[in-house]
Length: 191
Image (cartoon, rainbow, N blue to C red; front, side):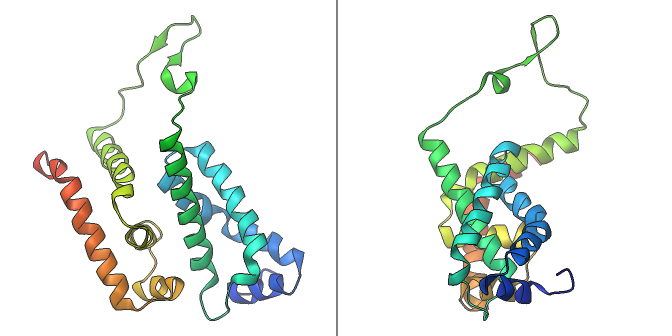
């Protein structure tokens, strides 16, 4: 199975080969987790989302058309599912005790470590702000932004996975970047 390309693997699974699905999970689980984590920002949520995405892929493989790329289809499904999870989480917020404080062996809580460098802290702040700002983008803008900047897909690959033209992808990306620039303008002032 490892010698099959993504498209052939998907076609084999569409034909009922369950071993092809197992190979798909092995091949794509890291990428699916990475996309889910970038949207959700939480390891446990991303792991849950990854499992749910593979269940969706299993159920919806009949909807995939061989004319489009298979990995972009899976990543788009991951992005959409993760965004849906983020929306649900905003509607029903929860906070565990572990997130509220870090206990020591004596039972007191302590501040997180301050050993990170300023650059790492700044990068984490920007990453968190971008994640928080993603809901202001339209679903198409968000999908294009995530596939381009987090997954590194080429504009043509994004267009193929979304079933639109490269020009449309460019427009969505431009508008997404403009909205994020406005939303995150205070970060520019402090640089």
